[in-house]
Image 1 (cartoon, helix red, strand yellow):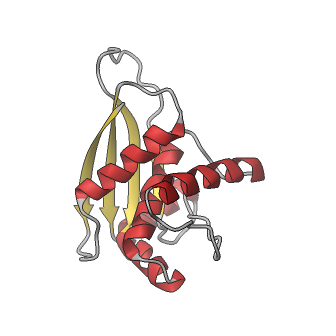
Image 2 (cartoon, one colour):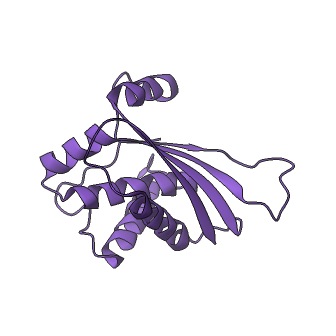
Amino acid sequence: MIAQVDVQIACDDEELPESNEIESWLQRAIDAAGKNVADEVEVLVRIVGCAESRALNREYRQQDKPTNVLSFPTGRIEGLPADMSKMLGDIVICASIVNQEAAEQGKPGDEHWAHMVVHGTLHLLGFDHTDDDGALEMEGLETRILTTHGVADPYGESHQRPDTI
């Protein structure tokens, strides 16, 4: 399965991963998830500032604050030919929140960015952490994906769950 990723930069933050890094982590998450998806999928990753993150979080989660990552799965698209790629959805990542969290948690910024991309992608694929069983499954998969590729267990000591939908 191949993911086509459109990365949009909509902020002035200078501490951002390269688009190819985002694409790589997104592909790793899709490959490891074991979900049956189309041969090609499309995902939009939009990197935003606090104002846009706050507005989206307020509108879709009724929380009037910026957040690290939001996921918006598209669901099934009626009438899409089987041989065309399927839009999985959008991931919105707030650069300043992710960079601030990495610093506060003493994590390398690139590793925390990888975690947010993997986390957002798994939400697009239907994983959730609203109950204990779902959280164990999702966090276990995140940890496996990240540690397999040289990133420390994001839930190791701090066990801080990303604040997403």
